Length: 111
Image (cartoon, rainbow, N blue to C red; front, top):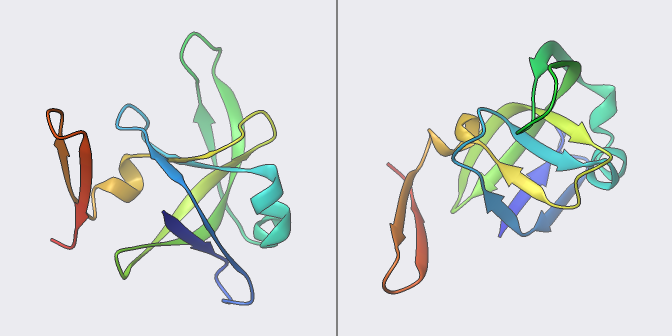
């Protein structure tokens, strides 16, 4: 579980975040973007590309992610075609991530 909030901390939501170690950036759903008013905080324009997709320029928006009490500010892509939060390396690089295949566990720690 991860908490996502806006910069002004006037809205937050706790959702299941899926780890995507193959992605440079983090993605949130359009529903979360609207609910937290993330569209009010554009940060930059970046060229993105999904697996098998074509490069596409996208506006990225500021968001704060809270995992295990650690707050991470990053620029997210808000996608209408994605139904879950995908945590990319921009968030994961701030954590210690332990995957135990045999025990089927994922552990997130503060470095």
